[in-house]
Length: 185
Image (cartoon, rainbow, N blue to C red):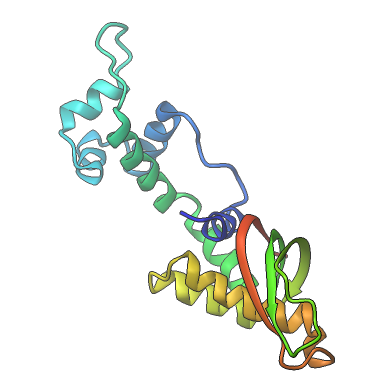
């Protein structure tokens, strides 16, 4: 998961995701009404394995391995705050969002301009159309590169060309993203 994808995910949440394996397992058990069988089916392990992970007996408790830990994390992320995520996504698509980033920007521009890439801090308000395009690309399985292209086009128009008032013909190259944060509402 790249910086842009992680930034989008953080923007859609209002509470932090449980960080420990025990807290994540408790959350999964809660969402499945305490059924270790259903949690086991979701994680692709046996019911007895889930029971070993959550038992209260001191000597019988086992911790999930790295592969199971990733499966638990993915299952929790998929189920964490679904209504809040839907509401925040709709809000971003309707009202837009503020995009904060530190990345390398370069330009393809007419002769005589400075087009050398350099690292910049940018905070820019972007419209809901960009949010719709980003979420549609993410839902279609687009990678970090495609999402970067969408944001480069939007930042080029909004920040560098000031919504079409200057620098006509300037094409922005956006790379080496150090961080990407999205503020919704």
